[in-house]
Image 1 (cartoon, rainbow, N blue to C red):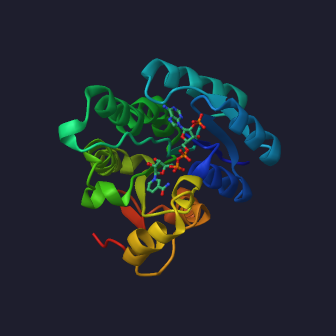
Image 2 (tube, rainbow, N blue to C red; image 1 turned 135 degrees about the vertical axis):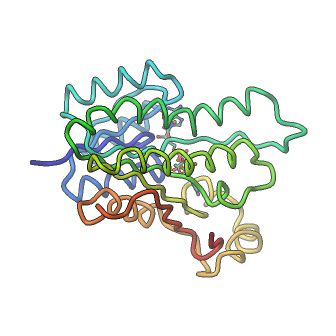
Length: 241
Ligand code: NDP
């Protein structure tokens, strides 16, 4: 029987690549999104993957969304906490809404989502939690105190729940991507991309969303049962923690 995987922010960018790769690996996949209905519908139609809309920053919406996914697809075996946003500003110019939006969407969401699936996983004695951090959560980044704090929090959260749930057949791991060639990054003018970004990446290119997705598929698999509490960096050698 197919395992069920839920990917938050699974309709666009890296999340879409993760949803597609999990489906190709044999999972029944649910992809959640926040509000871009057009992107979600075309993703659903092209890939035949079920999509669900709720805000991962809202605890009650997450519980409702999880219930709906479990009703339609079955109990969630694999949770991929991928949804994330940026609201960049240096700290002396950052306002409270910028701070709160990034912490709520990128970090509180891990509590909101994981809390909703963990009891079922513990009862069934199997689960995989994979959360997407960032190179900037490992090394910090100018203009991203909010984002770096949230993404570093993802790692601490994961190490803690990995310890709490290891005896129940549940693993929790992080994938920390570097610069990935999503629409946003590719929109940077080529000259700046080459001189400021690619020049800092030892492998000499951007990563592909599919390369992050392959890391997630491995961590979600039965083969990764002995891997828990780890952070898998996929950054072309840009930062080695
Ligand atoms: P995108 O902006 O391309 O896609 C974000 C996805 O998350 C969309 O599906 C979006 O839904 C969803 N989303 C955003 N906010 C919420 C919310 N409040 N509730 C539910 N869903 C939400 O993101 P990326 O693919 O660039 O990034 C994916 C993850 O990877 C993020 O955690 C990001 O921090 C991380 N990352 C990205 C890197 C990169 O180079 N792109 C590098 C390192 C880490 P909708 O379509 O409705 O807006």
